View 1: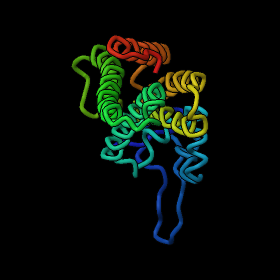
View 2: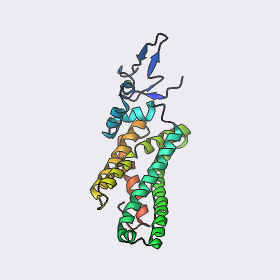
View 3: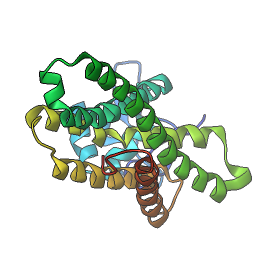
View 4: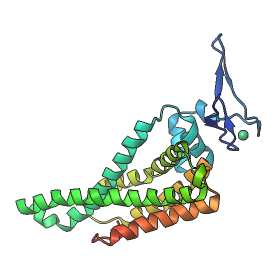
Length: 236
Ligand SMILES: [Zn+2]
């Protein structure tokens, strides 16, 4: 049987998380290596898992990455599209604020210009994520060379997309304070994403802790720098 699950405590691979007997009895499987339950999170509510994930607990990251069967590959693709759209919206929102007076005056030329602005920000956002993920993929391929497989690519993409959810937390900030630029919120989101990527890469067991941190930091800084070359606001 393929060992597709992972012990959240020590990272050892396992065949199953729980065993169902005929009488309706469910037995939690213990890890061969550390003797702890392979995944205690299967007994917890999704909200508690989410809180631990946001608190950057390695156990929660292992659970989300390996042990949730209901997160399929098409969900990951949809989430990646949502992240690009949200990132584009955040950039476009600040661009729109710059032209706020024109919106009040119902200037139709400006309105079309704003719509065009959204598409340009969407393209910008797509390039930002492509550079960020592409850089980390490049490091992984250089490190593994011939032993790099399609399964590792899917695992890495899943880790990177799931650990980019910090971007979604900026949306409430825009709703709560639409009149001014909340750069502190963006900065916190930026730092959170670096640590979240790091933790996800460590959980994926593809990189060491040091390479995970360095590649995450460099990938994000590089993507921001490349986008700043053809964008007015380099920070966003
Ligand atoms: Zn274990």
